[in-house]
Each structure stands twice: as C-alpha cells, then as structure tokens.
Image (tube, rainbow, N blue to C red; front, side):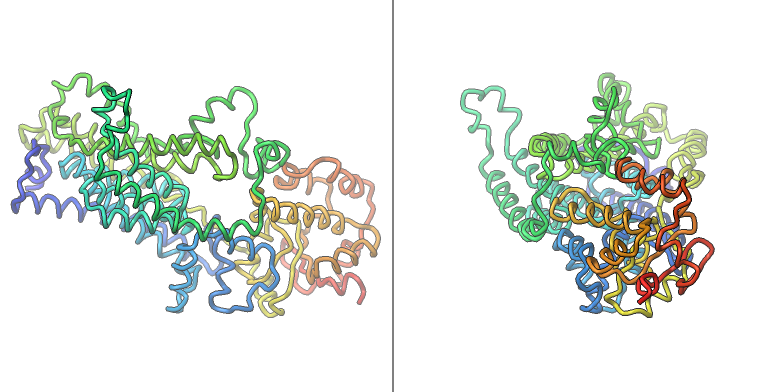
Length: 579
C-alpha cells in the first residue's frame, strides 16, 4: 500500500482524485511527525534544568521582563539598546504572549517546535508544487527539518527563527499565484526579519520580468515586463518598506552605523574578534563564497550530508533520458532561481554600503539554503526511479527501504550534537537567587563570561558582558568599549580613588569576581579580553599580578563577599570602598 502511495509517477496532469489526496495527506503527516519529534528532542534539553537558556536567546529575551514589570532593568543601556533594535513584529509577538502570562524564557523553548512544524508542512507543499511526487515532498521536508535542527537558527527563538516559517509559506502561495496570502506573509516577514523581507520583495520584481522574451527585447527591455505582475511587485515593495520603517527608525537612536573604513579598526570585527567579519590570507577570498558573516553561503549548506545529493542534479539533467522522473519537474522550479537572483542583488548592495544594510550574508545564506532540500529530494527520487523502482517489485522496495529510511530519516540521531541547541546552563544558583532579592536598579560589574547569564537568570543589570558587545551602532558600541576599559582598570586598581570614581560614574553596586581573576593567566587566556582588547590595555594588569601587587578589590574579597561559590565571589561595592 505504501509503495503504491509513494511511487514516483508522471503527474504533469495531476488528478485531483482520492488517491492523490491520500498520498498528499500521508506525506504531510509524516513530514509533520518528524518535525515534531525533532522539536521534542530539543525541548527535552531546554527543560533539563532550572537555569537553562539558549546561547543567542540571552541577547533577545532578558529585557522582555519589562513586558511583565515596566520597572525592570531601569536605566540599563544594554536593555534599552537591544529592545530598540529588535524587529517590531518580534517584540509585539512576545508582548502579546506576555498578556497570556507566558514567560519569554518558557515560550522560547516551546516556540521552535511549532515554528519547525509550520516550516516543514509548508515546505512539503512547496516541494509538491515544484515536483509533484509525495515521496519527494517527504524527503525534502524531513531534510529541511534535519537542517534546521542541525543549526541554532530555529532553536534560538530569535528573529531569525521566523525566517523559514514565514518565507516558505510566502513561496508556497507565490507559486500558486495566491497573491493576497503571499503578501500577508511578506508583511509578517518584514516585521520579523527585514533583511530577508527585502529579498522576498525583490523576488516579486524579478518575477515581473518575462525572462524568455528579454533577450529579444534588449533595445527596449521594459517591454519584457508583465503588467499584472508589476502591480503585485509594487504592492510588495510598498508593503515591505512600510513594515520595515518602524524598526529602522528605532535603531537609529544608537547610530551612526559603522562604516567599512571604521570596521577595519574595530577589534570585534577582525579575524579573531567575537563578530569576525574580515579574514586574512587566502581564506579572505573563498570565505566570501562559503562560511563567515560576509559569505554568500552557509557553512552548513549540506548539513545533513544527504543534502549533498543536490550537487548531482545538474549532471542528471544532462542525461535526462536515464532519469524519467525529472520530467515531472514543474515550471514553478524557477522561483528558486529568481529568489537566488534577488538575494544576490541585495548581497552586493550590502557589501557596497557596508554596514548600513547590516551583514551581507543575511541576504543570501537562508534564501539559497531554501532551494537545497528540494533539489536534493528531486535527485534522490530520480535516482531511485532510475534503479527500476517503478516496477514495484517488493524486493526492490525492501532493499531501498533498508538503505533509504536510515540514511534520510534516522542517521542524524546518531550525531553527537543532534539536535544542536546550544543551550547554556547556569551553575551559580546562589548568586542568581541573592541578586533577585536586591533592588531592581542594582548593577553588577564583572570581567567573566558569567556576566552574560546574570540578566537572564538573576534579572539584574550588568555593566558590560561579552554577549552584549555588539559593534554595529557606534553610539552604543563606544559606550560599551569605554565601560570595558574602565572596568578593567578598576578591577585591578591599587588605589581606592580609582575604584570610587568608577563606582560613582556608573553606579556599580556589586562585583562578580572569578576566583582565578587575579592570576596572570586569567586575562591572557580569556578569549574575549585577549582577542578584543589590545595588549597595552591588558599588559599593565598582567604585569601587576606577576609582580604580586594586590589591588583594592582583591584585598577585600574574603571580608566583603556576600555569596561564595566554587568559582565566584559576589562582593558589594560599598564594602570594598569601606562605606
């Protein structure tokens, strides 16, 4: 029965009969089942402890405590900045959830499963619109789900988590010429992830050109425009600009945006920096094509490895007679080429005005990735069909099943980090609990990576932390660099006046000090400080520790600590200053 339902067939004239609907429904059900299963595996990790948060989610969620309590994180530069640059639709979505008393942290662990199922379901439908063979739809959808859970895009519950669940429905309705629904998802995409929305809006413009007629109309190329499609393209562009405008205006409070010339002087954007954009040596050339923030393609383009079958599709097309299933490919497949063209246009525009349109790779990596599972599924089905599978012999189905099912559907479960969640566990519960009892205006200063976790787990502000050192808006970035410089100086200062000036300038209430912070190797081996701050800034502190000079903070650790753990001291500033 299943063999008959999933048999590759020539359905260029697809019958709308009960058999087709059963095939379609079973394929959709299988696709959603795998998406749900992978999501449950991720949720299991997310709810494995009291203090667990996804790595990138720390950047987006902590300030949403303000939705529940408007007085949370008062006068907090980091919270104000991150709230300002978050897309309008993303903020509205979580604010709406807060009205139902759903905490951002809980929702961020559950939401990716739902988003993954939406992406998987629509991707199944999109595949059938391009290659109407249910088996191919299942393969493409499952491989997409595997890809999404092999990366941290979906699980982050950040704005980029909404890319696939919004772009894929947009394309699904686009190829079906259901313009109203397609534009609806375009508007949502613009509210959640403006970069890809610009690409999608340009897709409508690319589609307005009759590319077959264009070569013969090179003297008057405007005659190749299809008027009906032009009106749709104008509507798409107008809608996108209107939806993007609020996000654009709010982020300008922390401008100006860094220029390309300035970026060359910013340590965080250098090869060893936290947001490495530039490269040195031969890799600076090929990394524009593959991998990195400024690259056209994602490093995970063929993850899982079964997606590499897409590379064989072109040679198969050259020998079409041996692969009769390729005749089932519909003209709608050109939407993938049109989307790629639109993405490349914005990629080079982003490079031309870097970084006013943010990172160039954001325009291409996801859009090109969308085509790969479909192309891989077409290749897999065509290879199976060419092997005589159309003869419906039970033995051939059994052999194919024994090979295909483990390879396509189950092998990711054997991978060490599948699903890849990048969930971070907090291990300093006593510190989080103590800080939650302190006034909301409390400010904590620390050199350690643990400062990244405090806003999420302790619900209190930090002076600076590596996770929040974003270098793209200079109005924000310069303040963070100055804070880091002053923090480093005060942490190792041997005179109380320097510490007091630091405390008065920023209103610091607590120090969070790692037990190894006063050993010479601490700064030298600390990836953030050693890679993003110059030796002239770090070396005096290192020399001081090597010489055995004891600073003000170090002198008062044992006397003043209010919480001690295996790794940290939490120390009130007023005790350090002797107030």
